Length: 145
Picture 1 (cartoon, helix red, strand yellow):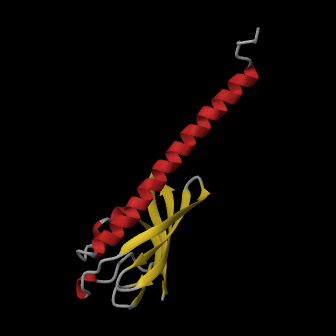
Picture 2 (tube, one colour):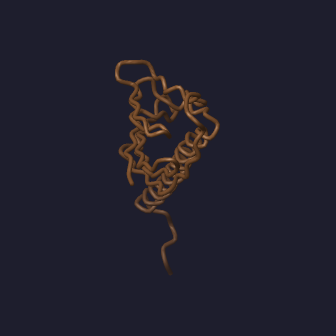
Picture 3 (cartoon, one colour):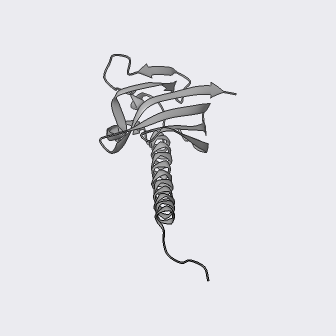
């Protein structure tokens, strides 16, 4: 007859398995949250309200990218976070796809994807969890095509 008692080794293995499953679940929730936030940023370009969620950006954020009219912008290099005045540019519609997430540490994720619209760019956003909130600390876009 098989031994059905839980020995310390079995208990430890069971605890480890449950903890690992909880960690994967939390990681998937964080990944979904960040992908949804990235999508929301691009959706905001349709209405020229890109700065609608300043709480998603770290005060130390560095951002280098392109505007829909092909102009390059750079912010966060010693100045306060200030995005280009989007009202000076026409609304733009982009499709984002190909999301990949790298877990650099438990509190840092690198999100990369591509955005296609008036211009096509590869995007990399670095998110860091600070005070239990995810903040973009770096954004960089590279034009292609």
